[in-house]
Structure formats: C-alpha cells, structure tokens
Image (cartoon, rainbow, N blue to C red; front, side):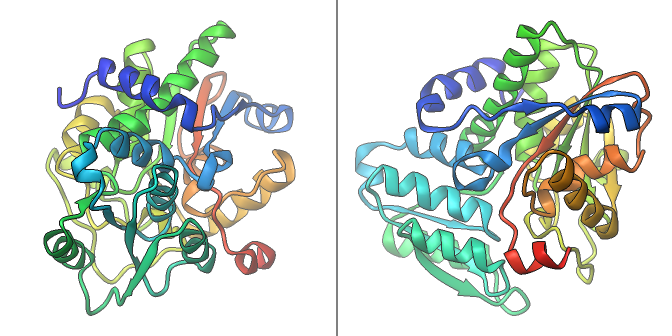
Length: 320
C-alpha cells in the first residue's frame, strides 16, 4: 500500500496538539426519520473551518528547516488555501496561495487574514498547477498539493483516528462510512484507518452530480476525467479527476461512489442547520445529502458521515 496505518498514527501524534479533536454527534430526529444510527464527524468545526488543516499541518511539520525558510506555495479553491496559510502562519513561514477569482469571498478573505499572499487566477484561461510550479521554481518554495501527496493524505487520515477512538469508547461497530470527495485525499486517508479498525466497514466516496470522477473511475478501475463544461455549487469538490496517489488507495478501500444533486445539497444544508445547529458549506454537505436522500440502504445500520467543511458565504447561507 502507498499509505499505512502507522503513517496515519504517526501523523496524529505529530499534529494532535495543533488541531481540534472535532466531535462525532448523533441526532434523534435524523435517526428516527431514517431508521438508522447516524454519526456525523464535524470537521466544519476544525480550525480554518475544514479538515484540510490536518494535511497542511502534517506536511509543514515534515519540512526541513532549510526548506521551510524559503516558504511554501499552494493552489486551492479555498479550504486548502486557508489551511496552508494558517499552518504557515503558525510556523512563521511565508505562504503564497493561488486561488480562483470566483472562489467564495469568505475563503479569500480568511486566507488573507492568515497572512498569505494571494494570487488570483482565471479558471478559464489560466492553469493553477502551471502558476504554482513557476513560483516553486523561481522562489524555491515548497509546493503543498491539495490531495496528491502522501504526507497530506496521512494528515487527513487523522480524522479517522478520532472517529475510531470515539466509536470504540462507545462500543459501536459501524456498518457504512460516507465521505465527501473531491481529489480523494480525505476519503483515502480516513478509509485506510477505519477499514483497519473495522474490517467489515463499507466505505463510499460521495460527489456532486457532474463531478463524479471517483465514482466513474472506481467503476472503470482506471482514472476517468470529468467533462469540462459542468457546474456545481460544491466549490470545494470540483477536482477534474482523482489523484494519481489517492485513486489506487480508494480503489482498494472503497465499495463504490455515490453522487447527489445541488438541490439535495441545498436542502441538506438547511436540515443540518435546523437539526444539528451547524453551518455547513455545499461541499461539506454531500455525504450527509447521500444519507438524507436515501442514496444507499441504511435501514437499521450504523453510519459514519463526514461533514468536511463549513466555509460558506453568508449571502448563500442566507439565500438558502
């Protein structure tokens, strides 16, 4: 395997004092409605508002002093941007972050607030990887990729350590794990750990309609790209295709992929706000949307649902 359980446990030891051990919560109304036991992992309550801080913090913790002095560079639609900026700020190193001009305002503003230099680019005419690699070469910065990096995947997997620890303390053995999926780093890391702790667990990647590249890739057993003309409100999950590192892990670990519509996501954000009293961004709500819209048979089962982020523009939240 590309990544081991030991890699994830070592990452947790390294970063646990720099992150929040986010809660795993259940809700009687939702459980009774679905006739199931659903446990939501609230990574929207993580510092910077998403799970991405785990991977960024772990990656930066592994850099040598000589490398770190030159700073880091990253590209992201927002959550990885904030995470890298925050982790860099906490380690007194400089960060340059490449973000799309149309990224949610809250994500751009927070990234600036954490002290990063922002470079905005046009998603139609420019390529973020190209810009990132140019800055890396010119300024000798370390490029921190959003998902296709072993240290980042191990860092994201630490959410799985917390889930497993809490479930074991409650004597609960889960049946199904549903995780939001863009490039696949979070589901790769967490499913690796959870599958080890709970061998009979069935894990699924959940994606927005039109961005179901992981679902299609799992079905075809090879990497399949999304069409270029599709749109979704789930800005955090719009990766063009699975990662070269994340896909083989997910092919081994996952039982399949599920996709949900933007309308189902909107309704889910409202229900989570009303029932769990939490603010969830569209990309962070897709796994919950799969459960709440009966995309999979969960009757009488114990389900873990990843809520991966909460960075939603207030205008959008109000409009919902």
